[in-house]
Length: 334
View 1 (tube, helix red, strand yellow):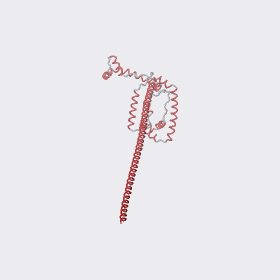
View 2 (cartoon, rainbow, N blue to C red; view 1 turned 90 degrees about the vertical axis):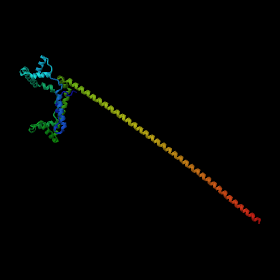
View 3 (cartoon, helix red, strand yellow; view 1 turned 60 degrees about the vertical axis):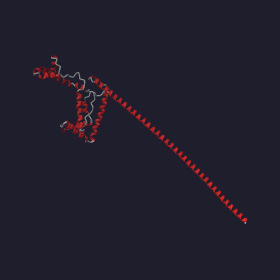
């Protein structure tokens, strides 16, 4: 689809100017808007808009005729030197160039007015068949307000500020019909513009006025830029996805390592537990063995003590028996 690459940047800026802008923007923003407006004007002046072949050509000034004459007759090409000669030239020397320039300028003005009044100039600047963008609800209301003498006699900037402040406090009941009309007009305009473009009338007008090549070039450049942006976005997306996949893989690796470390720690704890249990069991067995050994030793000692006591008792009994026998023997001898 062909865009309005040929439209004046100044006209676009004027159309998009917000209602009461000077009331609501900060001084820094205001300065930026003014600078942007100056840049738009400068770029518009330097634009390579095609020239209507039927438009009368502006004649050269007397100075340019004088310069061309000097270059032809004297071979003088330095513009600074030509300017110096022009400043020093007498009125009589300039008169011939002035007369021709004035005569051609007068003839040019007549031809240009005829060209303008014929409608060719407007038709070349803008296709008469192209639908015009409708006015917004705010501007519909502002047009009515500007008809009031009090506002009509005010400077433009001051009236814009006043209208902006009034619009901000305007009841919704008054704004609603204006918005509805603006919305309906915009829908009608959109449909008409679509039909105009699809009919091929826009392309035919651009081709007729010599703008088609620059518009197609602009479209190709815009398409290339969009493709470049999409490519960059694709690369950025792929890079992001790659980084995400890498991060997920690293996170999964860390998680797996963490699980392995946890399992290893649990195995080490279990091994230590088994080792402690075995040591405890071994120690308990050793204690039990020592107890049994001590008990056996005590029993052996007890048995020896009992045997010794029995032997002592037997010895004592034998001694008593011997004494008793001896005593009986003595008694028997008496």
